[in-house]
Image (cartoon, rainbow, N blue to C red):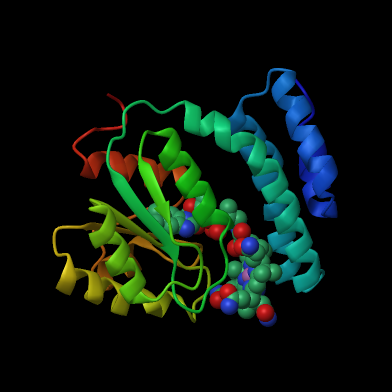
Length: 213
Ligand code: B12
């Protein structure tokens, strides 16, 4: 089994090229994409998150680490996507207005694609009407809102209100570090996902396909 700590260390160091080659090597040596993601990339980013909170590193370092994490995710995307079969449904996803964090959202999108969803990714800083337009345009059954800041999670409510008014049939999932199940319920979401696996399970349930089947 390859040493996945090395990947975490390279994410922390923000060495994108090294992360890319270590991820490739780990996959070649038999590590699964999920192991690389959890024990390598996410483990490294968690350390960066703790250091950021403790004011030991600042935005530029976090940005470089985020880029390094993305350089690793590029190698995992085709594996997660290839696992899927016929499209289960269409899922529109985006990070809410005012928020530019996209790593978690991208992970959720990647795992949903792997579970067979057609994923329409609207990117970051997405206005409520843009979610509405995309759901209508793509005939999506599900929409996911991501927020990483306490100052932007408040954008979930107006976004959900706009979706309810225009496309009442769409199921709405919310997530992101500051969001809780209680908060999700208070803004009128249909569901909450603590992580990408959770998001996939909820999405499959909404489509009438329990994850275990
Ligand atoms: C990376 C990062 C950045 C990067 C973002 C790069 C990028 N491309 O995303 C940069 C440097 C740009 C950044 C900027 C800022 N950041 Co920042 N950032 C982080 C950090 C360290 C990691 C976030 C991350 O990617 N985590 C890894 C992913 C995998 O986890 P995740 O996002 O939580 O996603 C998982 C789940 O939440 C869930 N999920 C996520 N979305 C969704 C959606 C759905 C539908 C579902 C079901 C589930 C789901 O599944 C995901 C996968 O498991 C966090 C610290 C932390 N611990 O969260 C701070 C953090 C979020 N940032 C913070 C702050 C304050 C900022 C800035 C305001 C800093 C500044 N002074 O400028 C700016 C804000 C810019 C803006 N307007 O958005 C604070 C927020 C505090 C708060 N409570 O509001 C945090 C918590 C750091 C801290 N101080 O403790 N940041």
